[in-house]
Length: 289
Image 1 (tube, rainbow, N blue to C red):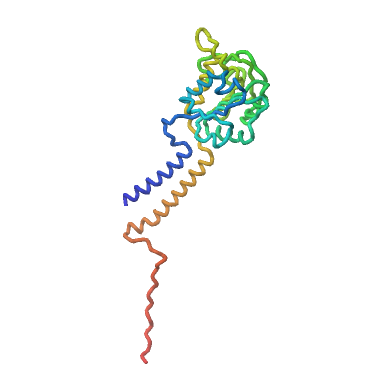
Image 2 (image 1 turned 45 degrees about the vertical axis):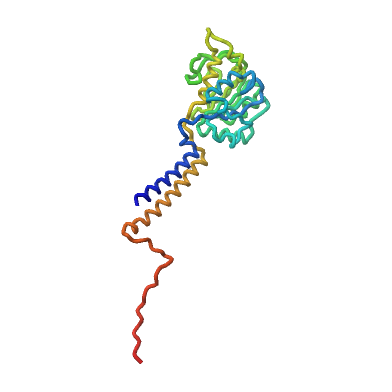
């Protein structure tokens, strides 16, 4: 009896573990984190191109090497499967996220995983609005200068301002600087938009302040470290449904076992209703002939 009980319990735990594992809730703590990077089309301002080598190296370092960065052609459920964070690079000014891509962005961000999206100035208004509108905001205007830090946050750690190249600003969200060029979105502030790809270019990283790295370099390093940091993932609705269905099934099995347990405890085997004996009926006495 005890052996059977342990086997039944182990089986139930195995099923629950498989369901939770599908949601990522039981992922090994030592597992290397992976980045899904949707590479853009603006050469010199995107991952892997000559003008962005320093950012490319910072991204690779944050995720433990280029092997842990999956370069994607677009936002798809298949491409995003198994990645822990998302980076969307700059596309052409007239480009935009498709309706399907916006759905995937919304679903991914809803899990609490971190997202970085790169935009630019007014020359990229269509591109900017394709993701800002999905996040609940919109593009505002061009910005230049050196806006001061407006929010103490890991992304702004170590700097007091951010010299801009030729940026754009957003309406909405939580601004990290006096000009809304870097913005956090969502109830858990897990999505960052930055509307100045040029500021992250190699030329700005080479500018030194009193012999130290430039504010742009520190900012870029902070961004890559932030997006790579582990977070608590909220399972998607489909995973919750799978888990709930599995638990209901296990509950039904347990209920059936409890129903038959009293008969086993009394030493009686469950009745087989298919072989129920017919009751014996006494024959009436017939008068002698």
